[in-house]
Length: 82
Image (cartoon, rainbow, N blue to C red; front, top):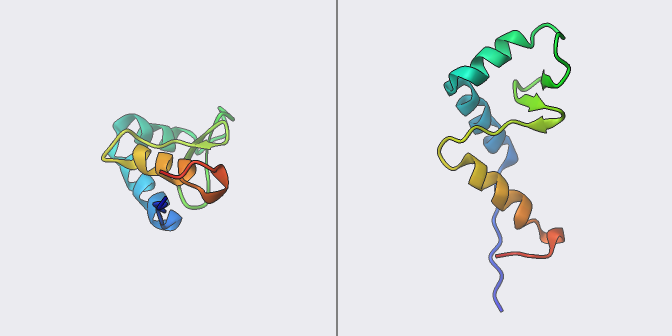
């Protein structure tokens, strides 16, 4: 049985997520608001990615959420490659 493996450059994916985040007005406003530590649930990292409770926020634009799903689901140690 042949396995399909997906190679995703996570740096490119992170860059695409950051660009998409800036395209969603609500997320762009959040990025501005969390410059002060008023709500510890929302944070950013040095690359400018938006986090909610430690998880990267992935906007529902293009196929970014699908790319993340493939990255995590098709990881070789997950055991269920498609």
